[in-house]
Length: 239
Image 1 (cartoon, rainbow, N blue to C red):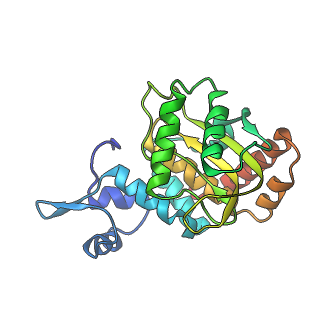
Image 2 (image 1 turned 60 degrees about the horizontal axis):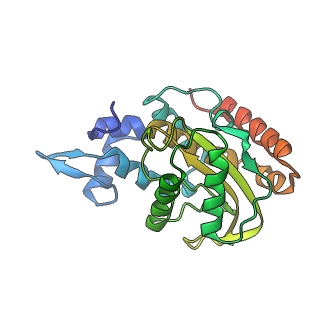
C-alpha cells in the first residue's frame, strides 16, 4: 500500500491491527478521521497517523506491538530500529535548554550531526508546526517531537533520531506536566515513522528504564541502556 493513497476499512484494519467492524463503528460515530466516498469509508494515512499519535500514551504494550507489526507491513524493518537511527553523535546528556523552543532547537542541532539533515530550518519549522497542533509530550516526563508528515529528500537524506535530556523538567504542553527526556523523530517515510513511535513507546514502558536514563551520566551509558531496552522489546514483539 502506498502511504500517499487513501485506505479502505480493510486496509486500515490491517495497518492498525484492529477489527474492521470496530473501526467502522468508530468512523460512523465520528471517533475516527475519514470520509465516505460512494458510501464507503476512506482514510488518509497522514490523518490516521496523527490520530494514532494522540492515542499512543494510552496504548498498552500489546497494542503498541500490534501497531509495530501493522506499520512494518508497509515497510519491513523487523530488527533494531531506534538504536540504528539513533547514534552517539545525535545525543546529548544533558542538553542546555530550559524552554520548549530551546529544546526543539537543540534537538535539531543534534540531528544535524547525522549529516542527513539538509535543511535544519525546514525540519525545525515542521516540528514546531506539529507541536502547535498537539503536544508530543507523553506521560512520565517523555516527549517525542516530530514532523506531522514524512520529510522530503530536500530536507532529510535518511531517517534520524536525536536524543536529549534536560537537567530539569521543561513545560511541554498538553497538560502532561514537565518533560525532561526527549526523542526527536525525523523519518523519510510514514511506515518507519509510525514504527519508531510505537517502539519508542514500548521501550519507555519497560520497568525502571526512565529512572536509569535520568541517572545516566553520559551518552555512552544512555545509548547502552536504550540498546538493551530495544533488544528486550524486540524479543517480545508480536510475530
